Image (spheres, protein in one colour):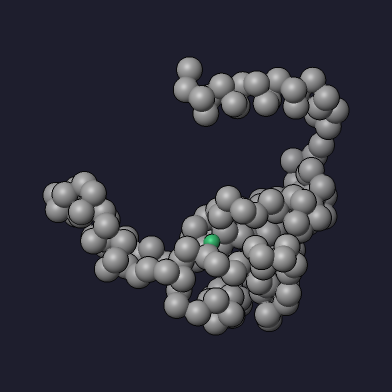
Length: 167
Ligand SMILES: [Zn+2]
């Protein structure tokens, strides 16, 4: 077993021994969704005050609403959520490269033939943080399926642990 697997097994054993919340409902009790980045420095449940069972948390590189759209529609239409918080963050890796760079890295690491697999992939990077939050809010507001859903945009500061509203 790898050390990563071992960590899972051991940590989960301790967690399960104390686990008491096995009767939660499937739909999120507070009817909202957080879209945030996969960045390892963000602890959404703690930083954003989300009790177990209260909200959906959708994570991807950059906290992209575009990438999260499939899950958002499921969350809203099948599981009754009515609010979306888009929370991007300072120091995001997505501020540091673009599509051409990412494709170049793949080609360098894996060769040109393999890089073909990602030649049309949009990595959804962004050059400016606040603007990217606003763009994602507008992206959702432009979708008819999102009508009646409350959407707001936020920045989480990895340096301070604080959130601030952008839109
Ligand atoms: Zn990030």
